[in-house]
Image 1 (cartoon, rainbow, N blue to C red):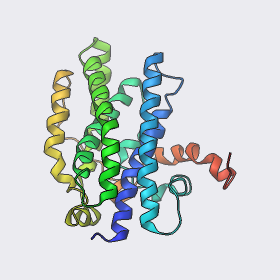
Image 2: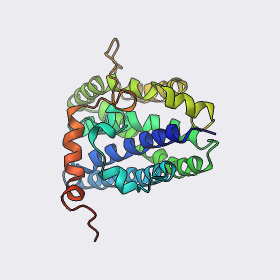
Image 3: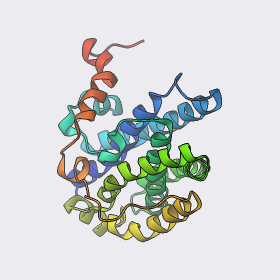
Length: 253
C-alpha cells in the first residue's frame, strides 16, 4: 500500500504533464500550416486534456480534500505544478512542436504500458484508456519527424535544430526521487530510470530514419517534476489558461 501523499504527488505529475502539453498544443488551433494538421493537433490536445481529467480527478480523490480536477488545473500557482520542463517549452515552429510531441509521446507510451500493470486498479484502468490514444500519437508524431527530417534541406535543418534544443530536457523524465521510489516499492509505477533503454531504442530508431543526429555532451535540464523549478514559460502559459477561472471564480455555464 502506497502512502497517499506520494500517490497524490505521482498523479499530479501525470496529470500536469498532459495538461500543460495539451494546452501548448492547443495554441496551434487556427494557426497550423494546413487544415489537416490543424485538426490533428487539436485532436491531440483534446486527448491530452481528457487524460488530464482522469489523472487529476483521481488525484483529487486520493488527496481527500474535496478538490476536483478543475480545481487542481485552474487554482494552483506555477510552483505547485509538477510537469516536466519539456511539456511547458514554447511551440516554436511546426517542426519543434512535433519534435517535442514525439519525444514526449515515446516516453508516455512506454510509461503507460507499465502502468497498465499497476497494482492500483484505478491507475491501471486510466493507463489502459490513455494508452490507446498515445499509440496513435506516437505513430503520428514519429512519422512526421521522419518525413520532415528526411525531407528538404530546409525541413531537415529545422528538425535538427529542434532536436538540439529539446534533447537536453529529455533526461528529466528518467530522474527518480522519493515519490518514484515509493511508487515502485508499492508496484504502482516503474522506476523512471528503468524506462530509458526502451525509450532510447524507440526514439533513436525514428531519428535514424529521419537522418537526424542525437546531440552529445549536452547539459541535462532538471526542474519541474523533481526540483519544482520551472521555466519562465509556465507562468505565461498559466496566465492564459487560468484567466477565466481567476477573473470569475466558480463561474459555470
